[in-house]
Length: 125
Image 1 (cartoon, one colour):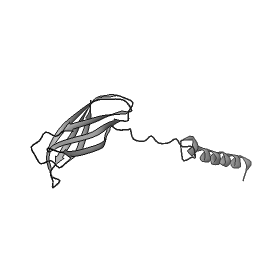
Image 2 (cartoon, one colour):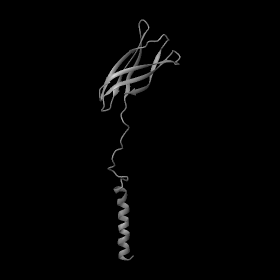
Image 3 (cartoon, helix red, strand yellow):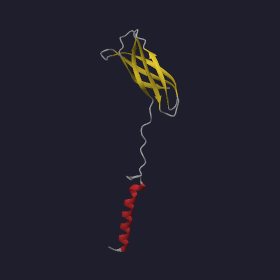
Image 4 (tube, one colour):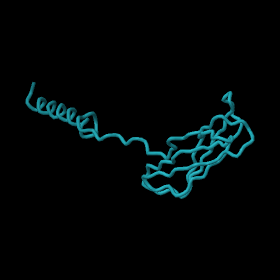
C-alpha cells in the first residue's frame, strides 16, 4: 500500500476511534443522568377511629424541594367497610418549609360509616 494511502487510512481509523468519545458516546466517565424531580408527598397517612365514633386523619406533608409551600390541598377519598368510595374531603395544610414537613390532623365530619381513607391528589399553591 502506498505511504500516502496508508497515512490517509490511519487518519480515518484514528478519527473513527475518537469520534464517539468526543460526541459523548459510551465511555467510562459518562455524566449521570438527572433523576426525576423530587415531589411533594404525604407520609404516615393514618385513619383512626377513636372512642365516641370520632374519626381522624393524620399524617405529614413532606416538601423535598428548595421552595417553601404556602398551602397544600389534599384531596382524600373516603371508603366504607366494603372498600367502596362513599365520599371525599379536602384537607388544607399551610406553611410547609423548604426541605421540611408539616404534620396535619383532621376530623372527618360525615354521617356515613367511614372505615378508611386514601389521598387521591395533592395540589400545591
